[in-house]
Length: 145
Image 1 (cartoon, rainbow, N blue to C red):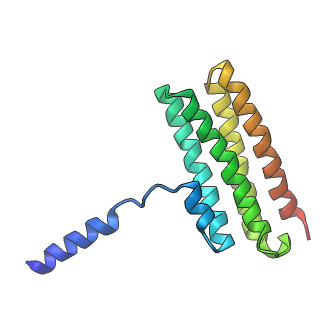
Image 2 (cartoon, rainbow, N blue to C red; image 1 turned 90 degrees about the vertical axis):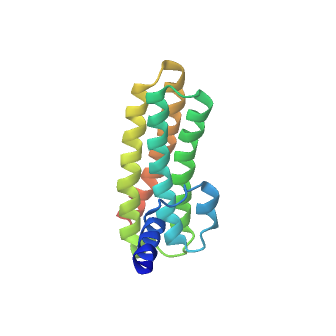
Image 3 (cartoon, one colour; image 1 turned 30 degrees about the vertical axis):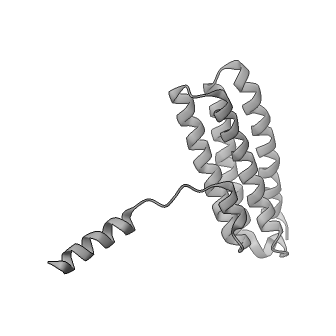
């Protein structure tokens, strides 16, 4: 009986969702490749949070914070790859992954801009343009030799 209780307890502890990822957590990551992955994941999570705020008609200030964090996280992902000191051709898998995921983020911001009101649309469009620049740098990394 005690064995089953231990197994049940262990399974509930292991099945608990991880704590929410924050920008500070990502910045504290020592390994640049893991920091890259965490930063991209954070950007995707913030896009989902921004959509949730739009659906629930949440506060505009919180919405703008989420959109800013999408761009900041994507920028941190690119900087993390650049900080390795390796040529982009040596990290082609990571650059390609970054290119694909930032393209998806850019598309998500474009759709988000259509879903929000006119005042927020200008803000989202500026963020999308910044993200497009980051996406282009990932693309240059993929194309470089």
